[in-house]
Length: 86
Length: 27
Image (cartoon, rainbow over all chains, first blue to last red; front, side, top):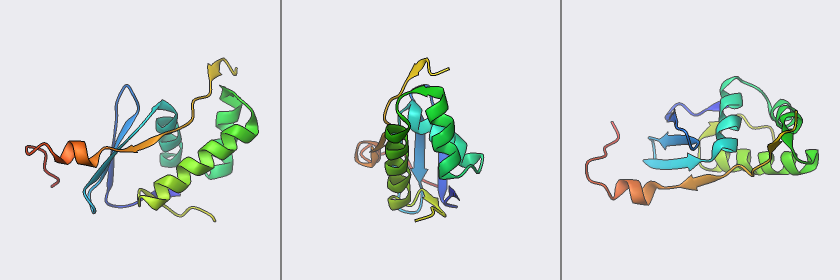
């Protein structure tokens, strides 16, 4: 997984601002989304991201896995990231 | 560990509110 070439991100206190410059769109994420984006930047795959977050947060593994997978699919649909394994 | 409560990650499209401001340009 990696960011699309025309994507710029900027970290803020509340989360992250994402600029999709090709279709001129702007997105914002919360802090959890920001943590996931950080791990995508570190070239971690979906399994690693889920495992790390499930270890650090107070929640069931299944809930974290579902939420993270949905979020990553949303990033892909909005052409923010690519290389997501189906 | 596990002291932080899980919050569902959110992705919000704010393009309309941002693009409504004429001084913001993508270059």
